[in-house]
Length: 237
Ligand SMILES: Nc1ncnc2c1ncn2[C@@H]1O[C@H](COP(=O)(O)OP(=O)(O)OP(=O)(O)O)[C@@H](O)[C@H]1O
Ligand SMILES: [Mg+2]
Image (cartoon, rainbow, N blue to C red):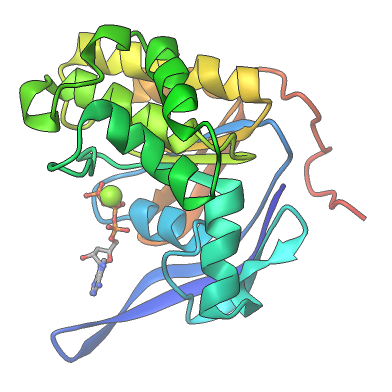
């Protein structure tokens, strides 16, 4: 599902080059749930943003569902992202001037779905917010806003769901509910899930935990049996 080869990201920090990611190589099979862990500043968000095609690496390439996204032009990349990837942010990123229902409908309307509002209503129901569709983000709690953001992220049934510390702004009980929701929706969709988290308890729910330190992979451990495991060190032909 995801193949990352020799990925490096060098950024400029006040005139000084900083190696944010160095020679990352990894393979994620379809339907796997991977957690990316590691201390603050280790490059987790940078890696997720690169896999999402939100940014361009300094070196290396990334293939998602057979498409080498690192060689796509801007328009193709935007289309690919819209069709294939759902992204959940730590800080929800809802549009404040739209209601919960309208926020969920946005990606459906952009892709020209005829019954966007109806689908959005069903999605809000799936995340337990059927009665809150007319509320604006400011009228919702953090956990409710994140539910709306999750509904929006899965609206187009993406085959890859990415989440960057989706519970970082929530208390631990609400955070756990959001993770359970993301995992359940991911399972229903049969999609691949890559989740960045600081929290070892949340990482432990994943099939596999990849830990970064100073922009390098320092451990890569499969906990639960993965749906289609590859023997360590072997590549997809
Ligand atoms: N645009 C940028 N320009 C310069 N340096 C950057 C930029 N973006 C990130 N960095 C640096 O890259 C390193 C990795 O950042 P990143 O946000 O990927 O870490 P992270 O593991 O997600 O951290 P956190 O857990 O705090 O979210 C940090 O040292 C950060 O300061
Ligand atoms: Mg981060």
